[in-house]
Length: 59
Figure 1 (spheres, rainbow, N blue to C red):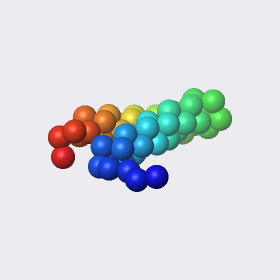
Figure 2 (figure 1 turned 90 degrees about the vertical axis):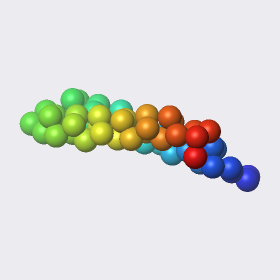
Figure 3 (figure 1 turned 45 degrees about the vertical axis):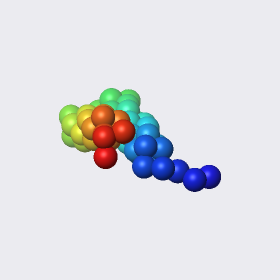
Figure 4 (figure 1 turned 60 degrees about the vertical axis):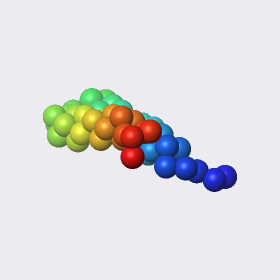
């Protein structure tokens, strides 16, 4: 499976977005005392995934 740079950016953005959503849900569902921290980190992961998605085709 040969990946070019656009494929790598696509997979990286997908994985980061999934991790971000998982962190937000983990904070909301399981660890309510630390929900703000989990949510901030999750939104950070989602925004980095969004930036990687925006870089596809430009780098």
